[in-house]
Image (spheres, rainbow, N blue to C red):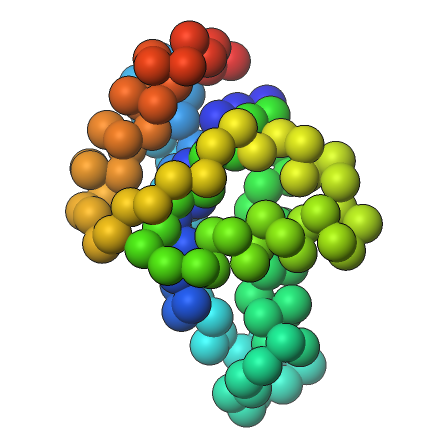
Length: 123
């Protein structure tokens, strides 16, 4: 179980799994990455769902999730979780914060400050 920061916009998701020993495992999901079913780019709700499911797959071991990002994608992702029967994962969201286009180090620092400010514990 872990604390995961998800920086998400309409095109990409960067995920940072923070560990108590100071390590951070990083993952990336690109909205336009083809999967094994299609090689074409698709837009709209069906493609959003595919993108969101790719992000969700990276969150299976998360115990707490902090959503951050510059626009509405983080809110759309959270709404998707709540409205598409992913309530177990939706309950793990501890925050949804605006964060423009930071570097990886800035995202990690933001997450660690959030943890400290909210007195959360890394497992």
